[in-house]
Image: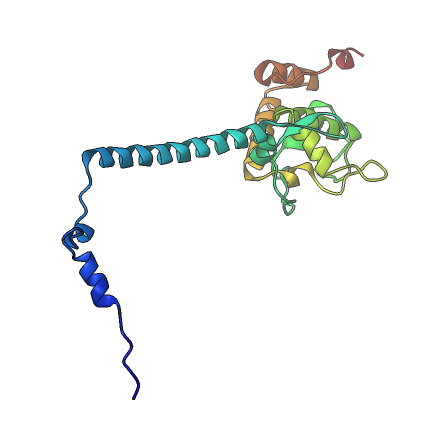
Length: 214
């Protein structure tokens, strides 16, 4: 016959319930005012440490966003500027200067190009320069150099995509605003010089006076 295995549970219970260590003290532990204050102080320190850490992370993120990035082709940008207006990947093509909007027709009218079709895909080379001056140069100074990095010139001088395909929704909305402001101002003018002079006064877009003096 096997002997039953002895257990120490009664002895342990007896020791816990002994006069020197009442079991009630385990179930109902009272915390003194000093201990409550200590817990409160520790909790406050932990909370403050968490807040300080979050604040430090936000400051580091802000510093990282403001770090200057030197571009190979010249100029600078920053992570903050990129996130504000530049898309993380190229966007599908949707015309921002469609025939239904008189951007090019106003340019042609003011320059007296009556024998040229503003709806034609092929346009005078200077029109591309003017688009940069009238539209893209009105963005913050980092935007156009950054777009040129994402959309470089190919062999022969053309680009594979339109610059605005690399703008995010906020950037494209800003582009449309600049486009519409240019159209509205062109419609009040009778010459290209008059338009450029007004554009400088209204929107601080510079122009070369000597080009008009020739």
